[in-house]
Image 1 (cartoon, rainbow, N blue to C red):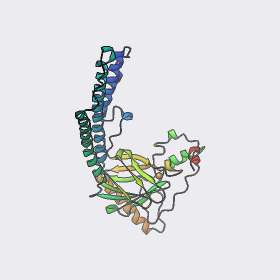
Image 2 (cartoon, helix red, strand yellow):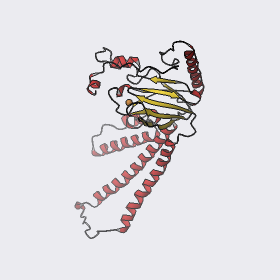
Image 3 (cartoon, rainbow, N blue to C red):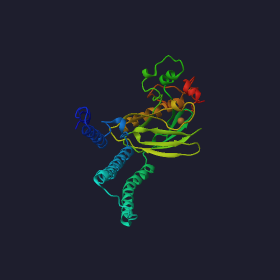
Image 4 (spheres, protein in one colour):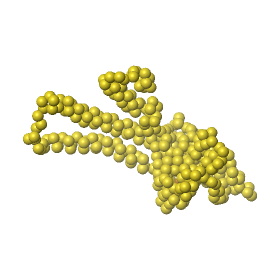
Length: 329
Ligand SMILES: [Cu+2]
C-alpha cells in the first residue's frame, strides 16, 4: 500500500465535522501503519531502524510498545467517550452518589496495568541484558575521547593499529569565522573526519569507551547505541552491523564537552570482512614501513594507511570558531 498516496490523495479537503474526523483517523491509521512497516514513509515521525542487531531489537520493542499504547488509548478514550455520550445530562442521566468503593474494580484496574507492564518489561529487560553482553566479541577497539577528537586503538588481530579521528579539513575551514565558505556546500559538514573508524560487518565488535580529559559520549544513531566516555572509567558497548549494510555511518559526541563539542564527529566505515582484512593488512604494512623508516609518515589522505610507529603529536588548535562557539568558552 502506498501510504503517501493514501494520506495525500485519498482524503479530499475536509469541510464537514465528519470529514474532519475521518481525515484525522485516516492520518492516524497511516502513521501507525508506517510505524509497523518501517520508517521509510514517515522518517521524521519515527526513530531509525538502524543497521545493527541491537538497533533492530530496539526498534522492534519501540513498535511493540507503541501498539500497546495505542490499544490502551483506544480502550480508555473509547470508554470515556461512550460514557460521556450515553450518560449525558441532556439524556436524563442521574449520577450515582451511593457508590463509594468497589473492591472488584480496584482489583481489575490494578491487575490489568501490572500485566501490561510485565509484558513490556520482559522483552525490554531481555534486550537490555543483550545490550550489556559484550562477551564473545570478534574484535575489540578502545575508543578514547579527547577535546575535541577521538582516538581509536585496535586490539585482537588488528592490534597495533591506532589513530586519531579529527574533524575533516573541509568542515574545519568552513567553520571558521569569516571563512567565506558556505557550510551548505561542504559535504557532510561537521559530520566528516580525516580517518574514520573501520569495522567489519557481521562481526561482533566490542568498543571500550573512555576519555582522556572530560566526559564525552560515543554515539552513532544507526547503530542504536551510545555510551559515555568518562575519564578513569571504561564503558563497553558492542556493535554488530548486519551483512549487506556496509557503508559509512555518522554520529557525534553526545555529551557537552566544551567549546569544540560540535566539532568532534564520529564516522564509521563498515566494510565486508574480506575488505576489512585487506584494510588491516594495509595498515600493518604501513606500520611496519613507518617503524623501519627514519621519519614516520604522519599524514595520510582518507582511507590511506594511517598507522603510526610512535605517539602522534596533539592536533593543532581548531582555530577561530564561529561566534556561537566562542561565546561558550
Ligand atoms: Cu565530546
